[in-house]
Length: 266
Image 1 (cartoon, helix red, strand yellow):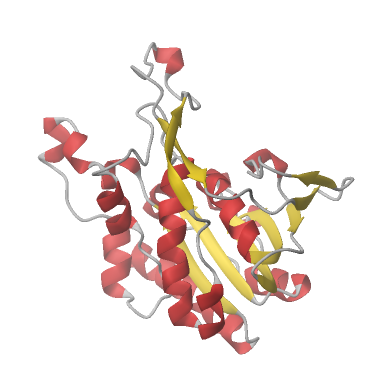
Image 2 (cartoon, rainbow, N blue to C red; image 1 turned 30 degrees about the vertical axis):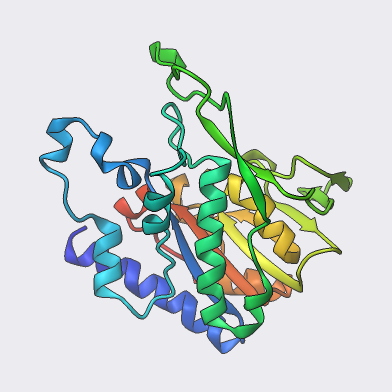
């Protein structure tokens, strides 16, 4: 990012933070790590030779006051034992998102002590299945199933899902909310915290949704709009949080979206 682009990100995110803080609403920012930043050793030689700091490092260094949760170190550590991304998919796997959620809840506990009661669901291991192949059209495929999923020690609490105001349905084991299903409201009477979270996200957030929905009794989910190329598609975050009665806002976006600063409405 050039200096102006970096400052636009900083000013925009600080404005959101300050408005939410004035309303007594907690705020965290979760960049969904790019696969190449978790597995840099697997990049081709030509790419490794030019690898350096990017927009996320710039933002972390220039604005340490922003509530950014950087989950990359924990993902890199977990990747030494199990895969956290598929070889044929740019999104973190369900297990990768579970690792990321562990990092997030640890950081949330430093934001407010009440979040210390949240934890990632216990698991007994990791299984591998065939996940979505983003590169099949070019003739690439995984040599073996490599989409990692956590084996849960206990079933998830069922949740009630309302997609775009339509009839509510109850979901048990499969609780992922796809990008095409938003806006969505998910309610869980058995959640750890009886609070409402506004989750602004993209497709990287899909694998996070079951873990967030187990933590909060109500999760309002909508697209952040950074990837739409139209500022009108970016919601007014502070106003939306107030309307939803949210006590916390989680802004999750794929790391690559930092490459171009949005006209972020506050």
